[in-house]
Image (cartoon, rainbow, N blue to C red; front, side):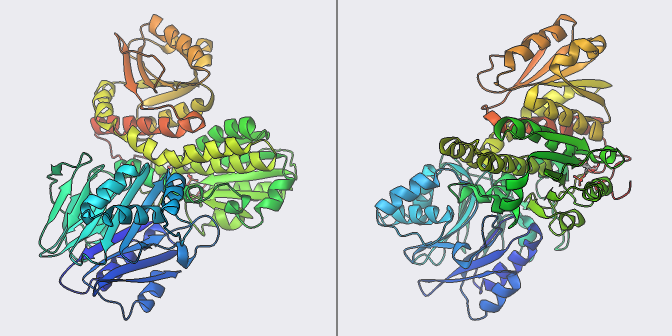
Length: 608
Ligand code: G6P
């Protein structure tokens, strides 16, 4: 995951920037860079590899103002030219996390204005855009605000200008950024751990905030450009702890990290016009050309990701797909097809059943293996020929959240790559999918805004013993995941059904004590789902409907509507997961359970 650190101080900031980057190393990265302002010039040092390499290269660099970045590329070799910060006209430097959705359009505009691009990143667009406003006589703050107004997407940025040696600008929308307040010095960073070396006073920037910091003070402006006051939190963390920041629990933090985690996982999409099999490993193109079917093996939440992928793979890529629970597959007598691609999905990469299922698949004759995993170099990844790493960063809450949504993002990439390879995807359709993927982080951010409403809704569940989750098609596995989240952390018995199955049994359970949660996207099955929900209302069941735009649901007696912002087509399951995670979280708070460490459960299940 990418990380940003910035500093303005009466001392040399290079050691602070480097120490900050080191503290962010746990997020994973493959290149790093920094810029300092020195004698009205930008001095930039970048390197691929470890922060230690950047440190060695920065020995002669110093300055009182600077920004630094760790980048984790997913597409092609990570290179020095793509490492941040990016510079425009020797004057403006920018470090950036996130995805700029309209970067192609902006790149074309800026190229027409004479800007020359020296990297393949979307970030460089931001540097040139800020420069274009700065060159017209705007202050650095105003130029940044004007540039941000033209960006579509999710981002956190740090900005400095060569001729402005006392001004550090930061901004966030969709990706985290905070301000560290020292005595006569100020800092920005992606997370607290980078700044504990210099201060414990942290200001968490809110969505759309821009901060202008100098030696003497700082000003924060909200999304509308109005001056804003944000509280200063005194961090109780030590330099060695994994930070919770402004959140009460890791699960809450990890739910909120999803826009950034998705942006990191999708970085390959952001900087390319088309997807290539190489994102799954050098041998992927040859392997994918030989496969005629997919077998997905996983446990728990990761198994649910596989169930969603099955819909995508069969519909979009036209490839037959089976999904099995790893602990069942490993002991089942099954028939191997050497042309099947065996895909294992795991957050930890060390789940015993998933590893054993993969070994079993290999033993009975499966040759093509791919792991989708959140832990690089984990045992599972090493057991597979091909791999795709999700970039969710460490997940600490036992109930998986950001690992799941990033697994889905990775599986969608797999779907597009296979669809292309099998001649099932027009250029236009590929561009549309890429466009939708670029938009995903900011769409996820918009869904998170439902949090206060969901917290209120959760009060209805405090005294419930049971709950029923309904979905159809692509969203049936999301119903399963919503039910799993609720039972894992609130200990309410929850079951999920495809809504069409209601009348074949579960309808017998429905009464006013049984909340029924319906996942209601604006898709082809909406009208069918509405009929199923009528069956519930007719029996006095209380409905909690998570509907997106255009579904024409209304709150009424016994119907509680949670209005999702937009319908995301094939990517809708990713967005519909988020409110269900929040619901489980707030119900657990009502119940007073140990959210991050629910009873009887473990994060990594390394035993059978
Ligand atoms: C445990 C965790 C779940 C997870 C499952 C599979 O049960 O509590 O959150 O989904 O293991 O783990 P994996 O690391 O293989 O995804």
